[in-house]
Amino acid sequence: MQDGLKLTTYLGERDRIGGRPLADALVDLYARREIRASALFRGIEGFGIGHRLRTARLLSLSEDLPVVSVALDTRERIEALIEEVAAITREGLVTLERARLLGEDAPARSGDLGDHAVKLTVHVGRRERALGRPAYLAVVDLLHRHGVAGATVLLGVDGTLGGTRQRARFFGSNAQVPLMVISVGDGGVIAGVLPELSAMLSHPLLTLERVDVCKRDGVLLAQPREPPALDEAGLAYWQKLSVYAGEQTRHDGEPLYSALVRRLRAEGAAGATALRGLWGYHGDHPPHGEHPWSLRRRVPVLTTTLDTPANARRWFEIVDSMTLRAGLVTSEIVPALRATAPGVQHGGLALARPVWTSRRRDGEGGGGPSRS
Image (tube, rainbow, N blue to C red; front, side, top):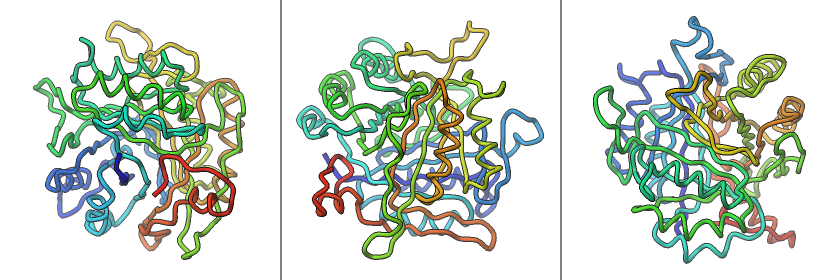
């Protein structure tokens, strides 16, 4: 198990640097540096610090959809990228989050997750096989069978896997285009899954992150944990709220993800992004997703918003009021965030101290995979 960092950039499809798409420049950088795993995802709705709505639901607003770029590697290798990423992303949102990287050693490290909630992400290729079937299907079925609270498969359109670039093309098998299977569950349950999960994959790459499960299928389980505004060095903490729900889930007659994005925008949130999944489940519902013979798409959608902890409490009230019957809602502490727009900049990319470490030193317990 290694200490890692996840570098996430939220941008627009039309954003450019030096006459070329910014998203393409980011993946080029990750490929050049042979980053262990990265993926580029095209969103279906969202807005950023400039509060301009982008959505695939309206033709007039679909020409500049949100794009999310994720890069994952050891702390040292990601920190070596930060200055260059900051230089080329003059607008948009960039975050850094701590994660633990697991590979072949996953079974040996499966007993140290504690009894808190954990986010487990599995990185595989689109056509990678496990147990004689697509790996992502086998992974999701395993997670569901073990009682993990939910899982969502996101399909990238570009990225790196094992340090090699894998770009989706119209003509080609796209066998190794990166997929991320994001799951959330109790640490003990996740620990029980790791040995079997590692054994079924030929080259396992897994990450573990600390998360709080706040709501599940309309049942309020906990309020988002409230970190201090600043650490001892004066660096800010930020907070991410995530809502996992089906694309067909409705609120007042419109898709929940769209209603959430528009309500958060109207109330002044700093930004929100919705990503359409390929396959997944939450709660006791069976895994489901895209079928070529289906008349109705039953895919999962992941909607996220990031802001200060104080503002996140307000946004959670909105999320809570709009997820009365369905959805899985989680909260995470983000130790570094930089949001920029013309004439505006918030935050920075220096990592605040791990909040759980501070809590342990104060005698409050804690721990888990986000320690460093």
